[in-house]
Image (cartoon, rainbow, N blue to C red; front, side, top):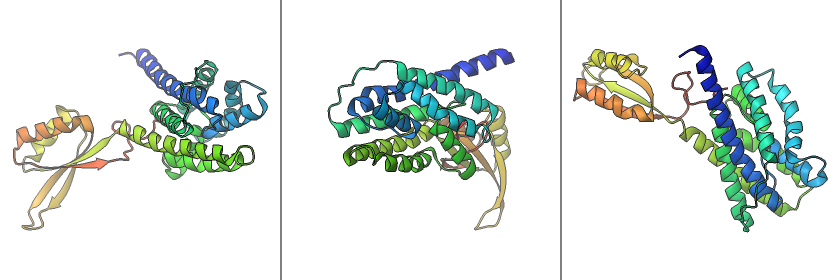
Length: 286
């Protein structure tokens, strides 16, 4: 595959992720939040606050104006690829907010807050699997993640604590509490969906035929492997342990391959929630 073709496919894939995530978030805003006069999280919440109080500009334009200063701040912290894709994501999301969306017909306000939080959480998680984001608070969360290792959900909660405190001066307490429900659901769903889309496992294999197993893992299955030296606690005999971090879908391949070489191989599969690395990492592509 030529470099141009690969770059084109990458661009289309990540544009699709940004568009799909933006569509879910915009559907939550125009189909649930606006009809119920709810706030949202992040800079969408700031844009909604301005929209409800002044109606000076369309919501999409207000969001773009709010996100631009944060985007410029992120320029100093993030890579060029993330910056360019985020600029593209900001445009896509702003345009999505212009698309008319009928009221989804959720009359119960608590159910509306939960449903909107779920939709937005999925949308943010999908966009976070791309090379960029929709800009705004996601850019702040990316900076916090790089500097302090905060999860997407934790960054959301910190930012929105200030937003809700400000909203108390403009909205009834009940509306702010519904917004809190929305934000909590959104943060929970973002973390669960984001990490659920990229589950990783760590495998430990102990076998006297470690060399043949390791060779097949790397050559046949194209899985990474590291050899660790150890010794048995009972007899003190030297052991070579194969350590491999894999995607969940590769567990069956790994077990089958190891069993083919040594039916008595001792295999342990562990959860690996947070993995950094270009090939099997499950962290944002920022």
